[in-house]
Length: 182
Image 1 (cartoon, helix red, strand yellow):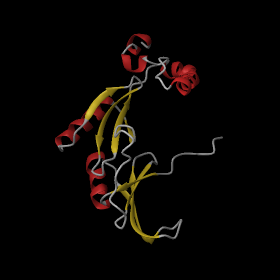
Image 2: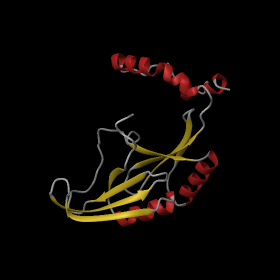
Image 3: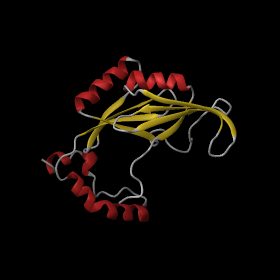
Image 4: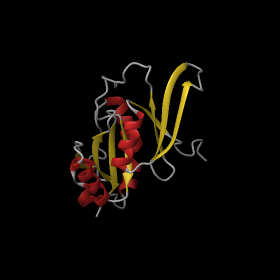
């Protein structure tokens, strides 16, 4: 048995907790399930007032945010491209994915995609705090995961030596998976 049973919650910083809760409810149907506010950090005792909100991400998954009004304005790691750090959320179908894209765009939110990753297709956009989000719909075909499983360590070892993208699974983004996995 694995030490970790599941992700309890994932927490990010937000600019405005109320705006964030309303945005996630409006655009992603994630309900606000809990709000906690303290004047000191429970784990460290540091005097640092905060609002901590918890959003229902479905099936026991929780997405949380901290508003920290006494800290310097939030930013992002300028040494990391903005496409790298993101939260991917699964939807049940391509129809749901495309409906979400239309709804987000109708609300004036810029959306990239859908992008075909062979195992899934996804769209990308930013929340009001500048966090990149991905909605993904599984498009997995029989044999894909097994093919990836057989090369995962070889790919990682090659990467560790060369820092160049191994081609063991190039089929994922070059389109050849369509013929390989019928």
